[in-house]
Length: 433
Image (tube, rainbow, N blue to C red; front, side, top):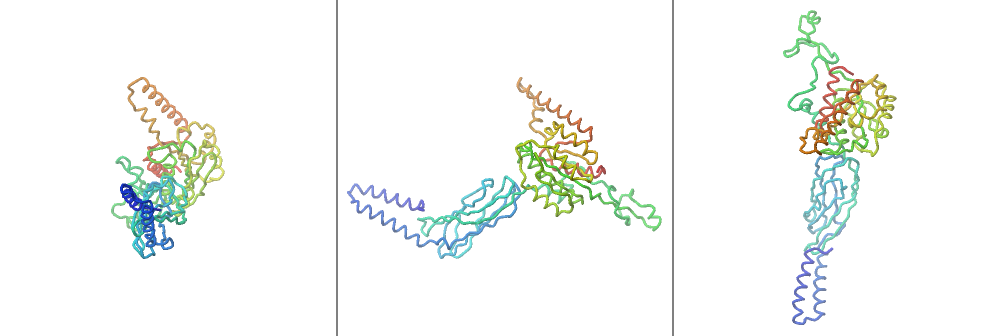
C-alpha cells in the first residue's frame, strides 16, 4: 500500500506539471514523469524485508483479573538485513481496553519488544487469534501488511483484590470505619494442648490442676473451631444484573463469595458453592484446604446473569437433598426480591431445622438517597413518600423472616465482602453452627 510520503511526492509532481502546462508541456512528458516516479518508488520495495523474514510472538497472561491492568509484550523478530518502522495491532476482544496501533522500529537481524497495557471488563474465556502488522520500506514510500495467526485463550476471572487483602492481613481487611470488628475471641474454640505459661498469656486460661501436679504454671491453648461446613449460594437471576458503581450485583457477589470462601478454607472449614437462577448452574462439592479455592474459582469465574427470575424454592429443595450435614447457608442475592418469594419460605422453614441461614444483599443506594432527600416541590415529596413506603415494607417483611430465624443483612457495595466475612467470623465465634 502507498504511504502518505509517496502520495505527497505525487502531489508535488502533479502541482509542478500543472504549473508546467502553461508552457505547453506535452502529454508524453507528463506520462513519462509519472511513470518514472512510480517506477522509482517501486524500487524501494526491493529494500524492504520479505514477509517470511518477519515473525511475531505474543506474550500474554493465561489469566486476568477483571478490571486489573496487565502489560502484554509482542516480540517482533526482524530476520532481514533492513530496518523497518512498523505499526502493530493485536486482535484482542472488544471487551478489552485497546490502545492501538503500536508504533516502533525494528532494526535488522534483531528482536524488538512492543508493549501495551490492557484490562478486561467482562469475565469469561476468550480466544485471541490474530496479530496485524504493517511495516514500511527503506525510504518509507510503501507499506506491507501481514496478518499473523497466533491462537491462544485467556480466562478473565473475578477481581481477587479483596481476597488477597484478607489473606495478607485479615484484621486490617476487617477495619470498618476506624473500628476493628469481629476479632477472633480468645479462649474460644477447640482445645489444642497444655503448655507452659508465658508472660502475656490470659490468666483465665491457667490449668490449675496441671499447675499443682507439675509445680509449674501451665495454661490451656485453644485453636479456632474448624471442620464446619459452609455452603455459599450465588443468585444469578435477572435482578443481579443491576448496575453498580463498578460492575453489577453479581460481580460484587462473586468477589465477596470468594473472599468468604478464602476465609473459611484458611480456617479449616469445608466450603461448597452453588450458583443458580431458574435452575442450578454450578455446584462445587464441599472440600477443605486452600487448594480447593482454585477449584471454586475455575467453576464460577464464567457464570453470568440470566434474564429469568430466580427459582429459590427449587434450589432449596435441591440443597436439602445434597447437603446432609449441618452447615451455614450464605446466600448472596437481592433482599427486596427475595422477601416476596413466599414459596421459598416453606422450604426455608425445613432447612432452618437443620442448617443456619444468612442472606447478604447490597443496599439500594438510589432508594436510600430518595429517603434522605429534602423535597422542594410536590413531585419530590411524592417520590420521597414512595421511597419511605418501600423502605417500611421491606423492614416489615424482613422482621417477619427474622422471627423464623432467617437472618438478612444489607451492606454497601464496597463493604459487601467485609460484612460477609465479619458475620461469618461472628457466627464461628459464637458457636452458632
